[in-house]
Image (tube, rainbow, N blue to C red; front, top):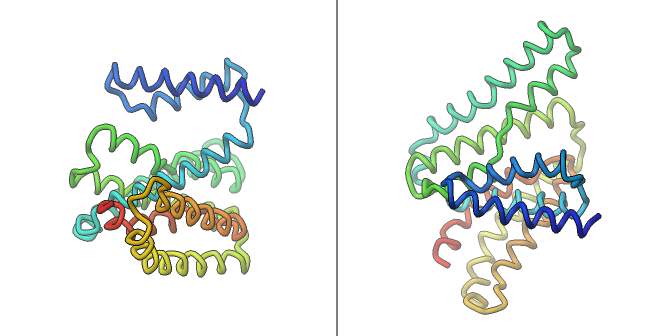
Length: 243
């Protein structure tokens, strides 16, 4: 079953890329559509290794999205980004929750869960679409990415406050994340100068290590690595742009 799922997924990803080029539609959107078809009609089931790769890929794309954001534009468009992101989270969350509670007469737990579901967005998918359309280098594209991050952060915060019981490990995750970002900002330039431009690509291996450490402590702390991964991309953006 593992080999079958891998074969089908690889084939669908390849087909999605062909369709994307021919029709000029984002490959990410086509891949999601084909994934729905695969799960319902091709007997492709969720596998642990696929979920693991997807989780790592999502965090990696979140980091890349942070690295692509122009900090100058982000500062200049902070109000716009915050306003767009807040509305895109609150409008579907409050609207759906209200409908489920007062029109469908569901209990508050079900109503809140229903409200969270449509309120989220995918920073990874938005980033992929912006890259494919060339909008990452434009002011509007960078504003959209910053706004999407606000939306995702609102969803993560909402899930944490409504459904997750924070513990002392959650506090430790926040402290460790801040420490990792601060240390990375100091040691990464040194490692890039000493070990950069080599076939072994030490920079990429270091990035994967840092992101996996963030994911591990996020899991321990009943949280998510989206926020620290995005911030890490922001603070290291100048290094990755220069290399």
